[in-house]
Image (cartoon, rainbow, N blue to C red; front, side, top):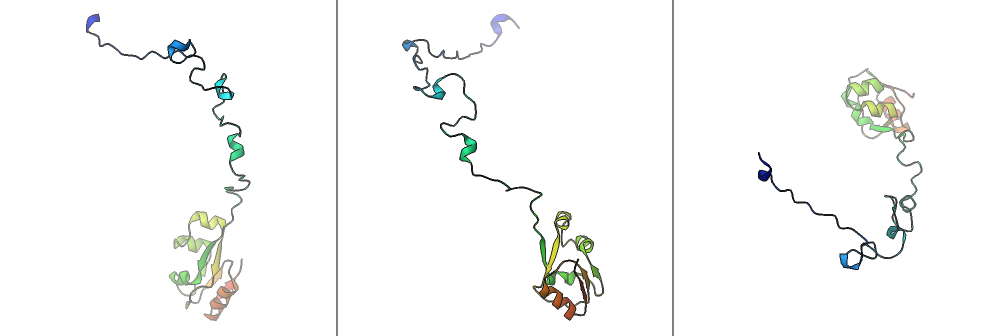
Length: 144
């Protein structure tokens, strides 16, 4: 390869701002007139008269993972997956994949929607209607 065989690299020269009216970018240099943006360097976060963080809504405790204590609500009809005379607790619900590991950490509550025919011993927090249905079927309701 020889010097005359090299490809020519075409580059655009950067337009020099503020170098007279004849340059096409003279006087204000494409920055408009007056204001903070016309002068020197400004922060990247500059948006005008109001800072960005003041335009956003106040979030306070929103999105706090420790603050959310939403219980997993399970209807009594889901407990049909268990056999008669079985003890139902958070561990058993995880084994049968009714709840996930994350939901088990947050907590579980049994609600009284649906019917139950099996005799079960349930060791979980529950509503009054769920307790009545479990006891009516002949099971034990131990509120933890």
